[in-house]
Every structure is written in structure tokens, then in C-alpha cells.
Length: 544
Image (cartoon, rainbow, N blue to C red; front, side, top):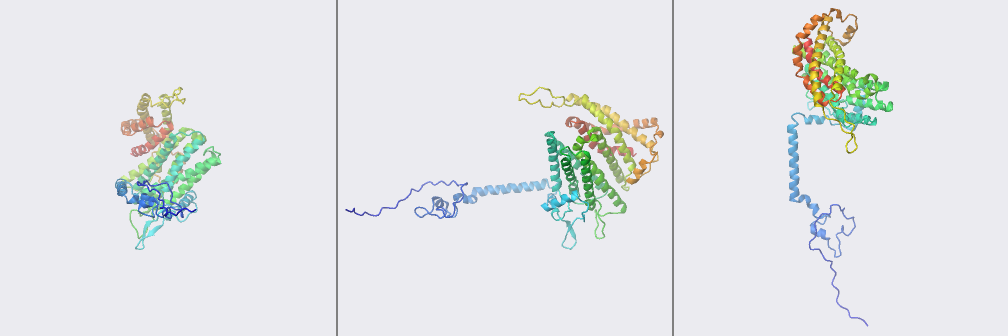
């Protein structure tokens, strides 16, 4: 018995949501090829609800694909572009008046191959040729501008000096940490020392270039770049000495040997590289401030280049490595020795600067008389030890910060350092500006008048080699000719003039030392740096 046939059943329809969510699926990847969604299939052969609502069959992300067409998004993007443009204009208008940003970009246009070749050149400059910088050829066939560092290994850059300075700071603190001597303030101290050395060096270089009439549009940036290459040698000295000494520091003959090599390599590199700045070649087709005017001026510039490349670099490289040397060497362990050496070198530099300034004012040839230079160097050797002992006594008798109590905090850690003792600081300041000032003023005046009477007919010697032989000859200084009564009368006559001039500088230096600098060695270094300008003034007084 068969059942009767009925009509065909209606097709099944799945319910379609009436309010489809348009929240974009930001984290969902697009469907794989060949899937039902990618082919736009469904039970009824039509597209998916997301495709129906999106309005674009190729947009699998729905309305999120039309985000940038949204008016709100366009307004936000336009606002961001406007803010960025205004910020860029502000930087160009305000910072650009002090720093030529476009010129500064030239010094950071480096490549990996340039950095490797430049580091090799700084450490091994012995057989490198040529040293002249490459220049681009202009439209008229003449040489136009210097090529960037990327295209010329002899071109100065700022990438290596900046990275070397940062590496030196981190490496110094790393070595201290490996020895169990790391302190957070060591980072600031090392960075400050490095920056002060660079700033003092640039100021001295610019002053020398000004007195020698050396000018160039990019000279300042070139000098800043060249002053930073010394950190490459310093880093090499610390790393090699630490490895070869088994982590015992940069002392001993190994440390000194590596230091001597890097110093000589850096000095030769600067001598060769700075020739185009300090000793420009004379050509008949060119003229201008970079041209060497005469043989005498070229001789002066040669002496200045030699003094900067060897004497100045030796002092500053030693200052930057003295922390590691001081821990290992017997002589450097004595802080009086370090302070005396610093003062002697800065005293000689201050007298040289004073002579150059005096010659420039008188429109006379810029030549250095080495006799007074050695006299000031000798005075620094005599006056520094008693001053160091005096400062050490003041700090021990009136400590800036009293010893921390043995009691512990509630968390079990030792109590922190005590705040600055105002009473002791005032006492030290008063004693230093009265007793110390009187002693130093009289000591300087007595020494200057005594040395002048002991060397009444001292010749003027502008050759460094000749003056060395002169000082080593017997009978150069005859102290039997010194009349102490005359010397004391002259010292008392100019006493108040020097004291009143010192009031403009030394009270501020003392306040900085007693409030900010914690160690006697650090105060000695700050005093030496401040004494550089004071030495110029005193050299002018002594030359009267």
C-alpha cells in the first residue's frame, strides 16, 4: 500500500540576524583560500552577512577596511600632520639659530664600512695615505664641498665620538662593578668628567684658532668631532689592559705600554687630520681666511698643532684614565702627585694662553716665550702640595657630612648619608677665603719677584728644544741675587690688587667645591680647571 505523493517541501531558510554587529575582527586573520567564506558561499549560495553589510565583497574585515575613509579618522590624521609640521618648524626656528641642523646631519652620514675603517685608522694611523679630504666637483669644474664621511674615510664624523663617549662611561662603570666598587653616582661622575674635558679642550682650541686668525664655516663642528676620537684609544687601553692583566686594572707596565701606544696613535692621527684646518695649503687660485699668510704664521700654527696633538692630548687622556691607573700605580695612589701634575700642566697652558692674548692685543707676532712657561710650571709644583694638604685638613677638621650613625632603618638597611653640615661648610669657606687667600697671594707674589731677581737677564726663547737645554744648563737660577726685603715690599704693594681680583672668582669656586664636590681630589681638579682662567690673569700681572 503506497502513500499518496504530496507537494514538494519548501526550502529551508536559516534565520538571518536583523541587527548585525559591525565590530571589526582586528585579531582574526583572513580566511584561508578555498574556504566557504573566501568563495562567498553559503547554504543558499549568497554571500555571508559580513559581506552583505560591508558593501565590498573583497573586504574580509568588514567596515574596518573603510576606516581611513571615515571623516573622523581623516580629521585626526590631518590634526597629527599639522602638529608634526608645527613641531618641526619650532625646532628649526629655535634650535636652528644655535645649531646648524643641516650641517650637523653631514657628520652623521656614515656607513658600516666607514665606521670599521675609521676605527682602524684611529688605532693604526702609521702607514695611512693620503690624509687629504676629498672634495666634490662643482658644475663649473672647480672643487666645491667636502664629501660626507660615508664617501671619505678622512672626513670627520660625530657618530664615532658620541658612541665612544657613551661606551667609555658604560665601560668605566662596568669595570668598577666587576671589582665590586660600583655606585650609581659613578655614572654621573664619569659622564661629567668626559664632558668637561671635551668642553675645556674645545674652548682652548677655539681661543687658539681665534688668536692665530684661523677661520672656517665648519671649523667648530670639525674640532668637536676630532676632540672625541681620543675616547677610542682610551677604550682600547682599558679593555686590553684589563684582559692582559687578568682583571687587575690598567696599571703596571702593560697598562702604561698600551696607554703610550694609543696616545701616540691618537696624536699622529690628529697631527695629520687637523692640517687642513690649522695648516691650510696656499694655492694661487684660492684666497680667503683659510690661506696661510706667511711663513711666520705657518710656524706659529705648526707649534700650536704640535702642542695640542701631543701635550694637551697626553694630559686629557691621562685625566680620563687616571681612575684606573690610580688604583694600580704607586705614584698615582698618592693624590698629591695627581693634583700636582694636573696643576703643573694647566699652569703652563694658562701662561701660553696669556702670552698669545698679549701678543694679539699688541698686534705682535704670535710666539711663545718658553721661559715664563717653565716658571709657572715650577710655581704650580711648589704651591700645589701645601694647598692640597690645607684642603685635606679643612675637610678632616670640619667634615661637610658627618659620619652616618650605626643605627639601621626600619627595613634593616643602613642609615643613609647625612645631609650637608651647614656650620662646617661656613667655617671651611671662611677659613679658605681668609687664611688660604692670604697665603696663596703672598706665595705667588714672593715667587714671581724672587724668580725675576734670580733670572735678571733671562733670554727670550721661542724654541721648545732650545729652552730645554737652557733650563738644564748650570747657573740658570741664582737665588743668591734675591733681596728678600725688596721682594716682600713688592709683594705687599700688589697684595690688595690681587686679593680684590680673586674675590670675583674664588668664592664661587669654593662654594661649588664645599657644597657639591665630596672628595679632596675632586676639589683639586675643579680648582685646577678654574685656575686655568685665573692663571691667564696672573700671567699678565707677572709679565708687567
